[in-house]
Length: 187
Image 1 (cartoon, rainbow, N blue to C red):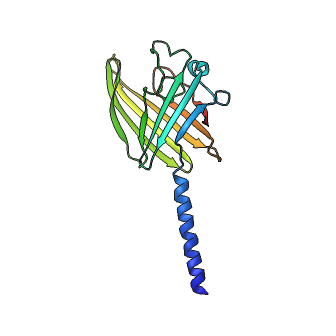
Image 2 (image 1 turned 30 degrees about the vertical axis):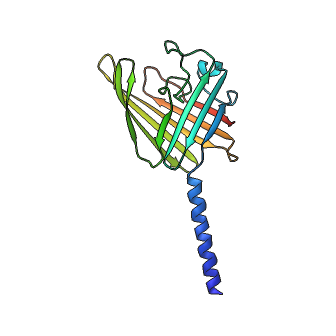
């Protein structure tokens, strides 16, 4: 009888560990469409866009976010635009996919802004069901001063995994930018 209780107890403990480990790695992968009515603090470009799509690919080691904006007016002096940033359409990120390591290690890369070059450091951390993505860009401005821009994004899924909420916070830059909350529906 003691043996049965011991085996049942060990099996229960094992199942709890498996459930806890799977809860730590929320699956954000998929194609997501922006719900402008539920989002807050969107730029004029995002509000006027015909369609905003966020495509996320994720495996055990990395997560890649690629945002596409269709229609609407590009930011002043910004060319046609169309991708990237995830900063609520407020110039908070470079165009193209953003790749983060899920093991907690920072990834660094060289970046170019017109005639300026700099370094970008990107890091992902998971806390409960929220994935926090931090991107810090340092570069020397045309006036010779060092500039640092930091974008922090907190991604969370609804209980049914059909709604993704991304809270964007930006520090640095030439003008203060309010936080944005972008709500996406799974497509």
